Structures are given as structure tokens and as C-alpha cells.
Image (cartoon, rainbow over all chains, first blue to last red):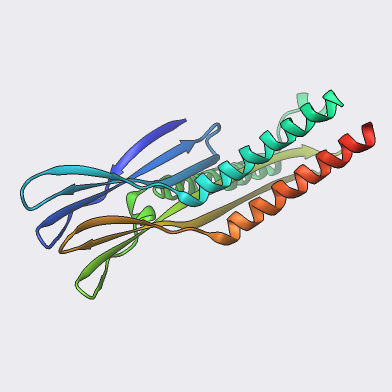
Amino acid sequence: MTFENHSHPPIRWHGYQITPIAQSFRFIPARPFGIIWNRPFSVQVETPAGEIYRLPVIDHTRFIQILIFLGGLALVWILKAINRKR
Amino acid sequence: MSNQQAETPQEADLSQSQENVVQSAAEFMQETMDQFMATADVNAVYGETIKHQGNLIIPAAEVVNFMGFGVGGGTGVNEDRNAGSGIGGGGGGKSFARPVAVIVAGESGVEVKPVVDFTKIYLTAFTTLGFITAAWLRMRRGR
């Protein structure tokens, strides 16, 4: 089970140098079986002035899905607590 | 008992050909596995750049790959001393890709714009709602 970051070759545009970075998760328990999950991780930007910063790539769909699921679990837990009190 | 008897030339040929088939299957599996391992690549996540109205657009997606293989074989001799063999194998895999964001580079700077999949969000919301309703009905019945 490994996590690795891979950098895309830098792209130059209007003086900016953009380097997209991807993260890959490999899970290979036995040799003829495996799962590889690749996701965009961040973008490294170098401005024309030479300043370097990183922009994270956030998966909003996944974030909202987790929020809905956790909200549902919390609501069930609250309903159970109210039901027990009655 | 037949296991202790000497192997006939016919049986030897059979087991040799079976070994060759298993070996070629193993080689094929290894080759496919190597190709599969190569999918953990940054090019799988970031698509080709698009130039549009003075902006550079880089699409970014989440890619998940599953793969599994299996192969097996065996030889045997029946009571009439007829040799037989068989091999079998199978495999499968699936790839999923989903857009996550778009990187837009213009004269004013670089921005990461999210791509929100509303279908997935609605499906999650309806599933969660179903789960809450089922839990609530069970609680009401239990009273």
C-alpha cells in the first residue's frame, strides 16, 4: 500500500510556470490483483516575479457527499436520543 | 496408486505443453499488470491543455482502476490410464474517471475551479434520506 506524488512537466503561460501534481494510492495485496486510485492533489505556481505558491485541488463533490452522509448519521443519532427520552 | 507409477511419454508431453500454456498465461498476466501499474501516472489525472480566449485550461479528474487475474491448471490419469489435463483462467478490471476541477491560467493568475457533480450529490442525499426514514420508522415501530 503506497501513496506517491507525481509532478506533471511544468507548463508556461503568460510568464507563469504551472506544475500540476497528482497523488496516487496503490493497493496491491497479491500480485495479480490491485487497485490504483489517482487524484489531482495540487498545483504549484511560479509567478513572473519568482514567487512560488501551491493551490490545493479540493474535490467538492466528495466533500459535500461526506457532509450529507455525516449529517444523516447525526440526525439518526439525535432521533434515537429523543426516542429514548420519551 | 497411479501417482507412484512412472510417467508415460504421452503424460510427459501433456504436462510439458500445460506448463508452457501456464507460463505464457503468467507472462501475459505480468505484462497486463505492468500496464496497469503504469496507470498510476500524472497524465491519467491531468488532461491535455486547452487554449481558449487567452486562457489555458487544464482539466483534472480522479481515476480509479481495479484489476484482478487468476489462472490454474491440473493433470490427471483415469483408471484406464488415459491422461487428461485442463487449465483455466480469468480476469477482470474496471476504470472509473470523474472530473474534479479545472485549472484556469490567464494573464491575471492561476485559479482552480471546482467541478461539482450534482447527480452524485442528489443520489447521496436521496440514499441518506432513505436511510434516515428507515431508521425513524424502525424507532417508531419499536415504541
